[in-house]
Each structure stands twice: as C-alpha cells, then as structure tokens.
Amino acid sequence: MTAIAVSVVGVLGTVMGAALTAFIAARAEQRREKTQDRVQLDELRVEHQRWRRECRQVAYLTFLEALGIADRDNQALFRELQARHSPVPLDEARIAAIRLKFKEAESAGLLVILEGPDPVAEAAQNLVDQLSSLVQDVREYAEAAAADCLAGRGDTVHAAGMEFVAAHKSFLGIARNALDEVAKDGQGLPDAR
Image (tube, rainbow, N blue to C red):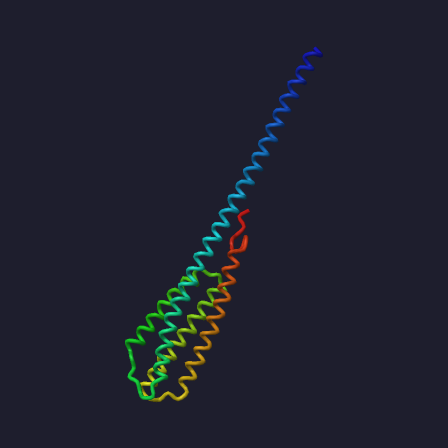
C-alpha cells in the first residue's frame, strides 16, 4: 500500500510539475507576445509620426509658396504704381489676378489649418488675414492712383506690409516648432497602452 501511495504521490508530483511548467511557459509566451505587440505599436507610432510630419511639411510648404506668389505679384503692382508720377488707370485684370492668387493661398491655408496643430492653424489664419489686408490696401492704393489722390496711402500699404512680414516670420517659427515636436518620440499621438 505504501508503494501505491508513493507511486500516486510521484505521479501527482510529476503532473503538478508538468502543469506548473506549462503555466510558466504560457505566462512567458504571453509576456513575449505583449512585448512584441508593444514593439510593433511603437514602430507604428514612429511610422505615423514620420507620415504626419511629412504631410504637415508639404502642407506648410505649399501654403508658403502660394502666399509668396500672391505677395510678390501684389508687391510688384504696388512698386509699379509708386514709381509712376501721373495718374494710372486701374488695371482690373491685374488686380483680379492678384486676388485669384490670394484665394489660392487662402485655400492652401485651409489645409494647414486642417493639419494643425492649433498654434500653427492660428498663425496660418493670421497670415492669411494679414495678406488679405495687404492685398486690399494695394487695391485701394491703385484706385487712389487712378484718381490721383494718394495722400498717405503709401504709408498704409507699408504698415500692412510690415504686419504681413511679422506674421510670416511668426508662422515660420511656429511651424518649425510643430514639425520638430512631431519628430520627437511620442509627441502628438495618444498613448494606446
């Protein structure tokens, strides 16, 4: 009887040892899978950050290029009007072309606002507002040049131009910071853990 009891205890010990080994192996496998899942999630986050940064960078650059085109044409008209010493007929087609280029810049700004983040969106909207004001001031200057009554209008355009330059500089700094922030590890993404 003792032999049977010893055999039963031995079998139970072997079964319990096997069960314990299987349990420990299963736990280790679960930990390994969780670690693997975290590594994959981290890789996806890094890839998403890279993609997000590239999308933002393209949006910001497209916006700045469109702003530059509209601003250069607007400045060229203003300088030509300033250089003339006699009344100049209002060039509606040119003013309409500048307005169209401004609208293209404004549309590119909508993508920047969509891409964000909020400080960049606000700076982009401010920049669009400043360019809108500047385009309007140059149009009023052109109308005044056609009527030969330019008193003080050049100063107004110059002040609006300086405000646009300041807004442009501010946007560049904010956009650069946003691009750097997205490039930092873990920035701009919710933690899925």
